[in-house]
Length: 126
Image 1: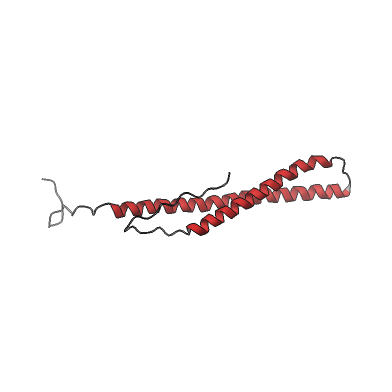
Image 2: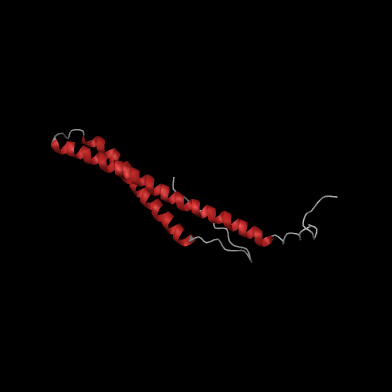
């Protein structure tokens, strides 16, 4: 499953803007998803080719089988790593959105009421 960037929560007037590199993050997620998809396609096509060479035997076949296992194992691990990296970027974007929502709420809320404490310190109920 490809990672998807969330829609950006825009700052309201007077709110602090959450610092997050939205354009760069979106480009990175796209690139990571594309690379993971390409590796997935290659792994799938290679797995369908393997049964077609059943009559191939000998030293070269043994060498091929070892290399095939190593390459597909590495590619599968790399595909997972790419997906994890894309997911991490998306999580960062989600955190930035949550922060922006808090900043927006703080900018829209009126100032809290003045303190109700007595001038001498303690607010003791009467």
